[in-house]
Image 1: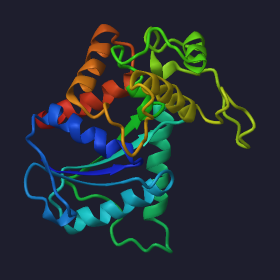
Image 2: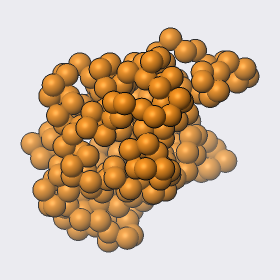
Image 3: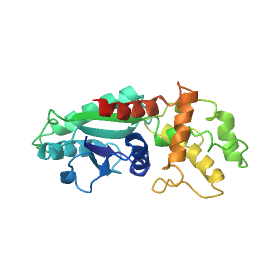
Image 4: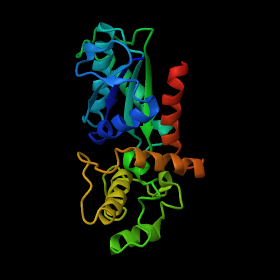
Amino acid sequence: MNFYFVFEGKTEPMVYQFWFKQLFRNLITEVNDYQDVENNNYYYVSDMGVPDCYNAVANAIQDINEVPKYDYLVLFIDADRYSAEERIAEAHQRIFERLNDRKKAYLYKDLPSNCHLEIIVQHVCIETWFLGNRKFFVRNPQTELLKKYIDYFDVSMNNPEDLAHEFIQSEDGTREIFGYRTKALFHEAYFRAIFKERMKGVAYHKSKPREVPSEPYFNQLLKRIQANPKHLASFQNMLLFFRQVPNK
């Protein structure tokens, strides 16, 4: 089984590399060039954001047709202000538009028959999932900012994916929640506040997530969804896909 991964952000590769070890029990290994895949390998590109990640998928389709050894092309993308269903529909539409852009003149418009496109949506963003770790949560916050966040919405008790669900972003960016113009930025800020207090003043950086890419952190997320099956639905969808892959 071979995978070609397109990660929208810079944090995802560092985190998923650890998660893959748990999900695949070290049975798949990374290669440095897409042409090097043989069996049970994965190759990835990352950190291009939206909408450039759709261009990356279109380019990946060209690579996979040249080296038809891949079983899955997987795009990892934040939902941000959209629902998971809306983001998936948008992704398919944008990828189709890029593949059929006459200026780009792509040779291949679709994947070979042995390869399938999967879109993993992180709702609202990957930091939303990180908020699901109850053991990492700060129950007696010392900073006023974190106290305000928890008073507004306690992510240890409530589904992190519902954080700021009532907030509707404006196209011109005039609406804000706790000083942030997007739901995703607020979710990230909430996690940053927890991280800084838990880590004794050490800041969370997307390029250096520290404690998150680890087996204990991943196991706490599993415990969260076992205790609350209705929480972190998009995280559960990701798990379901990768757990079913060997049977496919």
